[in-house]
Image 1 (cartoon, rainbow, N blue to C red):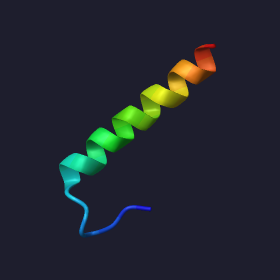
Image 2: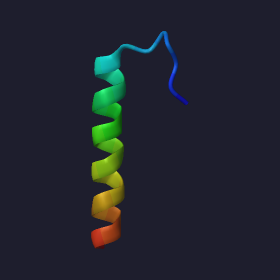
Image 3: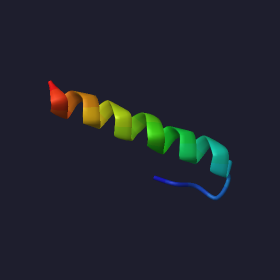
Image 4: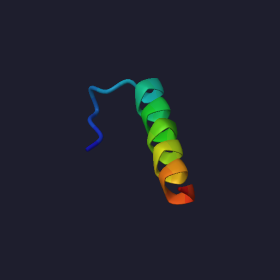
Length: 28
């Protein structure tokens, strides 16, 4: 899913957003 063309910052922020999304869904 990760691409070398993808900026590290975008990947990091994407991971954080995904983790928060999963975390909040798990809390529900």
